[in-house]
Length: 302
View 1 (cartoon, rainbow, N blue to C red):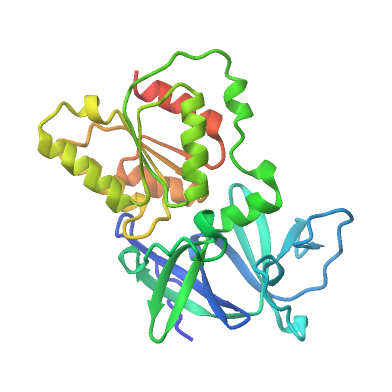
View 2: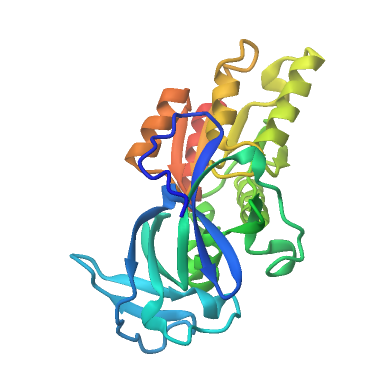
């Protein structure tokens, strides 16, 4: 087992640690930043009328945690002896969720440049479940879109357009906004929400590298920055270049450093907020708080 646990990743290095786990004969990965604990299988209490992929609930300590049956969600065979399964307890979008998996292989430190965007046919078509694929030794590890999994099971945990409606009448704005978001589903929802909020001049990119290329082209054009990019909204977890490294590049560049950067990520917690602040992010907000995101943009691009 490769194990780099305990290595404190510096901010903005474009690196991450992933936990590799197995379901059936497939190898999957989850960002260590999402994981709070890995524990052996425990018996759970079934919840009446819950989603078919909800295994049940259990209380390992002071909090009740919902267990997602990941093999069932992925359409894979269940374990012959589920008592040998493991629970990966994750924390994102201000939720604690346990994912039932069939084995944990180890922890790997890798660069986001090693992660490739998967073909759209993998696990569910255009809005598939694999946000990235990395090859380690002789095997492929698929990085799953855990936010999409939870949004599928519990839609109310995703971006809610009703938050925009509650903001009341809004003026249209042609201020240019650059967005870096690797999830096709979330990029589509973010575009719909911002358009509904009055922001229609949007440039959507699928990772930090693409967003950086857009910003570099603006710089080379010699145009006034605010006329081409008035705000940058970036996720953290993205193939090729993550949002922290993108923020670092922007804030270290003489031409681009005045560009407001908003980190919009499911990973925002106290530790991540400190990392973002150290890199110069102007604001940070957790998904799926779209109403708060719009309010921040309103203030930043006046």
